[in-house]
Image 1 (cartoon, rainbow over the protein chains, first blue to last red):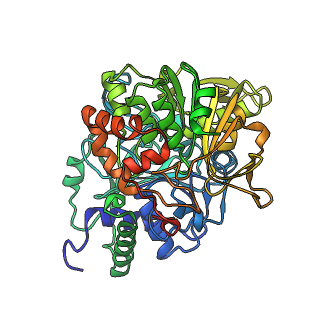
Image 2 (cartoon, rainbow over the protein chains, first blue to last red):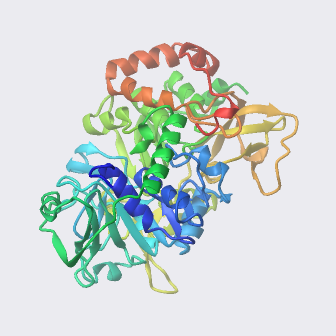
Image 3 (cartoon, helix red, strand yellow):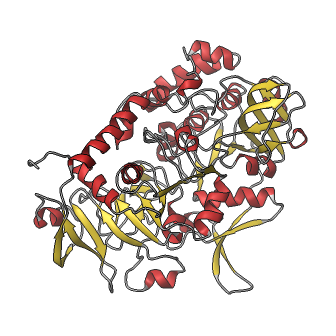
Amino acid sequence: MPEAAYTPNEIMTIEAARRLKNGTVCFVGIGMPSAAANLARLTHAPEVVLIYESGTIGAKPDVLPLSIGDGELAEYADTVVSVPEIFRYWLQGGRVDVGFLGAAQVDKFGNINTTVIGGDYAKPKVRLPGAGGAPEIASNARETWIIIKQTKRSFVAKLDFLTSVGHLDGGDSRAKSGARGAGPTAVITDLGVLAPDPVTRELTLVAIHPGIGVDQVKASTGWDLKIAPQLAHTVAPTEAELETLRDLHARTNKAHGSAAATE
Amino acid sequence: MPLADAVARHVKDGQTIAMEGFTHLIPFAAGHEVIRQARRGLTLVRMTPDIVYDQMIGMGCASTVVFSWGGNPGVGSIHRFRDAIENGWPAPLAIQEHSHADMAGRYQAGASGLPFSVLRGYVGSDLPKHNANIRSITCPFTGEKLAATPALNPDVTVIHAQKADRQGNVLVTGIVGVQKEAVLAAKAAIVTVEEIVDRLDAPMNSCVLPHWVLSAVCEVPYGAHPSYAHGYYGRDNAFCKAWDSVSRDRDAFLAWMRRHVLGTKDHQGFLKSAGIAPLGKDAINA
């Protein structure tokens, strides 16, 4: 494959999609997680089970939803339940294998901020939408994956606000906190993949995308990023993966009337 | 009953009002009517405040918002909400912030006649530090520490649904969100519907709200625009995107609201004034 035949967003989405398996029950966040989860469903994992917090179970959207409650999700779902039911029986009840989240900020223990940036809580510099379903997805799913573009502004030494728990303060602090599940097991970015150290739980660079240098990843991280001794290299997107993803985005843009849903 | 009469009779200054809809069936027409009738000091409750709460906040109806995710889905921020929080315009706005699972549970507790809701929630989160209503309780059986929050019992819940029969029984289909819980938790409930029909023909086990739990049922076609009504019309994504620029600027926002909401007497007048041609049934997925 020639150099730069794909965008950073595309390899991030494709690398995330590859991790989903047939039969995995995935609670899907809107935006990039939704793109990756549906790419998996349309390629190697047609039997992946996608759950959205709007109450759609086994959703099979033909185009990506612009909002978490688009009719597209309900139309082709196995069943549609109420919002209290989706959180109580299906998430809190322990039916979810993977909680798949986006974030505005992530710290070295995979804790997430989607609430405020800068200033303080009462007078923030930027007011973000808030928690949504994430605090309970992050603390009730068997494991969590995070998909996020890697920059010094998004990978921070200290979060401006801890919205949803990752490995908390590292070590066994998550296990002691009462959170269930393994927490973040993978953070997939446009530069590579991070995973928690088995003991300290600090996010460590374990794989790097083609053409990306370790220095570049370190320079895009707000803490002194540790590198796994055996750094893996992800595989460049195949033509089939790219074609399916681009078709999905093209259908989505056509349906929504612009490029708004590609993020 | 005309929507204006239902709002005049049931929605009063200073009340706690929930206008629910989980990105589907959002009661826009009812929100506009509350703006026309210039209600003030409302505590607005909703899991996902979006454009209609943005409009109500910007027009000065709200003093507090209780919520779990605030934004214009797929587009970005709701600018009047942010301006109120960040700059106190047009008036200071207090917020009580929760998570979705918790808000849903709070409505369930309210509908169930319980004083509080319990959940496995907020572990490690900073949210409880900023919301005194998020506390904890120890399970009397296992000793586990769990999150506890007070039941939600709005003075009035307002929802939009597909149809009602002539007796006023209401059928909600598609993504039903938290509407049943929000209605049953409330002291009064107003429902706007796309149409009133002779027979509901509701499938067994579907979400039906009997007439005797509702205070008013009003026929308001396209009453959920720019959100969608499954089986009737699709989401008006172009409107939602256009709202982003209208709402960024205080003067542009006020001019738009004065012209299309305050300057019209009902929802049909609004649709005509704003040049909105709702999308047909075949646009259901748009």
